Image (tube, rainbow, N blue to C red; front, side, top):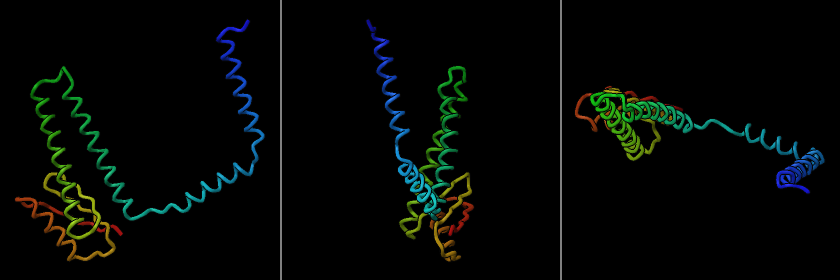
Amino acid sequence: MINKKGLWFLTLFSLIIVLSVYYITMPDELLLTNKENHSDTQKKAEVKESDILVALRVESDNEMLEEMETLRKVLTDLSVGVDEKNKAFEKLKGLNIIKGEEEQLEKQIKTNYNIDSFVKVKGNEIKVVVNNKDNSVTLANNIMRTVQTNYSNKMYITVKFQN
């Protein structure tokens, strides 16, 4: 008499045999067609201008997430003192504020100039990467003035055009 383990073994073994026979008898044209379609889609893929901004955003977000994760570990570590936890909390709060500023500036540039942009705030330096073919000095100055209106102290603002 067959027990449950034997029955399961026979069922799975027969399933594997059926799938193997099906794969072996499958026509080669079907496999070649899928590979050709896949390679065609890879050839058609082009780097768009906005992809550069997305890549910058993803890199910045990854850096910020790593830093936030280390600060959260400090906050949850029982062996760390209260002063260190307070400093970590303040840094974490500062990172959240900076992220909000960056998003606000990107939205402001999009609203005022209808241009996609990436903004990175680090201390008193602000780097703006703009997705625009027109590398006009006037547009760069206007963007710099727009960004500076959000701050009371002097900021060092750079604008880079990405074609």
